[in-house]
Length: 169
Image (cartoon, rainbow, N blue to C red; front, side, top):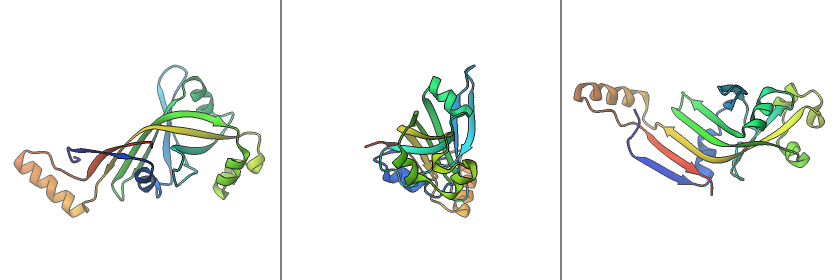
């Protein structure tokens, strides 16, 4: 479905641009018995300036206990209305940094952590980005339908959008 040629972008600007309007990500860890488990989470930083994604989580919750045993995680984003999809792999860990908590704190987090930024259950989780893939379709829906119909007639896969890789600086 996507253009066969891959592109590689260096730095965080491309990734920031792709995910800035996506409210929820699916945060995936390994359960103790080995299977993958995903749950929706809100990325707290909209601008990636330290090759990391930041999340607020419950210290007592499953995600924190799961990545403490296996710190490799996946964070995926989807925005079907703009045909933008991103998959990030990285290493997760809890960071004890009150200044960073305060900088990222918002009303949405307040709904989950009644004790505010000082809530003892509030864990600040950093996912250090190792690699990201993205798919970004720029063509509008009419052009997409036309290219898919053309592909059905010609037997050649349609070339839509761009697929690429993002590597931290």
